[in-house]
Length: 253
Length: 354
Image (cartoon, rainbow over all chains, first blue to last red; front, top):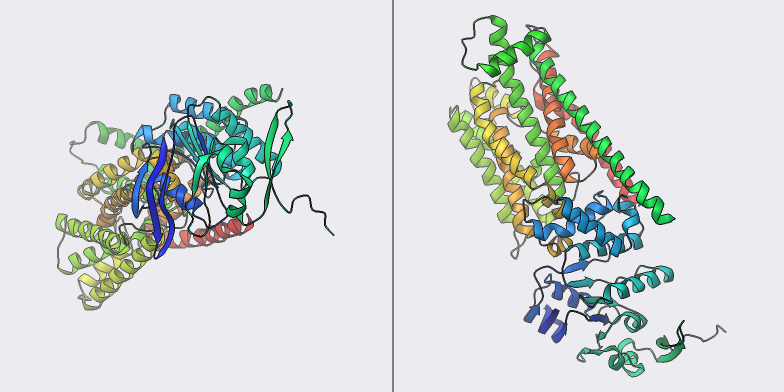
């Protein structure tokens, strides 16, 4: 379980988040939605303990599986060696990873769909591939909590689909609390149970199940753009909801 | 099909990697062994290699034996302590450089950057001027080296944490402060007695090596080195971005200062007995990164072996190339500066290219 209780963060006199409370129990997935500059990243940092809270409390396990947007790439490590770093917390400061840790790292790479480049150098991988390796490292920590910072921001549509499918397979066993930030409400609809909407102009953020929070009215005030929710037939006949901004479908004059 | 070929190639890739690493380490060890023996043989009085090996064997099996013949005395009392000290110092400096570059995530920093060398130089120059010798001199060097690091720590710690860039700049500030004081000491030193001693010592040399001095420097170099080596996997973690390292459970600030402390112990011990020797800490780790990769689990041992071998070679050149001894600092700078310039250009070309 991970979350914040009445958390407030100020930068000088500017209030970034105020009295923010939410929690993500094991088995649920939370999407943090909002345009840039509304405190998505600050909220994420606060959850991870990188951002000092001016008020309130952080609830989190000792080790949180954190997937940064881009990993450090000025050191040349193999992907497997990056994944095995997830074991660091279990090894202590003088510890060395043993065969068991490498086995765990390897199965984490498999779960993240990154096993095929286990022996490649991390800094030579593409952005999408790096992200999978970082996800494997987060899985290898063994933490019940995964926090992903803008996992889909730098990906093309094909890789976005693969990432969302991957997140769904990680979500399926319901043995982890997963949190990710995103610009796109469709990501929340397809892979999250709950959503946290970072509303504008000092309105309190909206937190609740996706079905209640991802509505045209809420999204409209969230993004300042008229929104439409459309129902689409899925591949196996069931209907899916999708969100489109009002400008979608308008033909260029 | 794809999965099948991957299952077949992955162990092969790994085996090829392992074979390559083994080969590189064997080569480095061979280089060190050859340098060690050659250094015992050559000099004003040359000794055949077989005789040198025989003498090492005799010296190792029965260290308290009476040394009678001239070649015995030269090899075991003059050259052996010097070669051992050079090897230890080179290994320590290269190891410190590799660890420091990892912690700073920057391949261009070196142990001098924390102000340790200049701080230690101040202690040494002061000691020589006051006419202090032996163990008290070494303690003074050591204490002032540590003082420099602590000073850097105090200056760079702002709002409870120290940023990488402030540490580097504080190191620069402390370094230039200490080197100004060293210049002042040189200015007031007696030109007939203490000034030449200070100048020569500042340029670095193993000429004064004896078993006693080697034994004084060895504990710091070995203990600091072993502890750094034990931190090799942790250094991989500390080489990541701050937030990544913290999310993996590292107390980055505290652990980084622990690494600095160990480096201060190593560099302080080295400067105390052989003066300031630059460049080793930057050139050797870079060469090792090219040979064995960036993973500190391979980089640290490779740096130790190559650093030791390189320093022995440089020291042998220093005492045999000309009739008089060339100061070590001169040779390491002549070799190191061009390599560093190349490294600097490649580093930024790569960064701008990607």
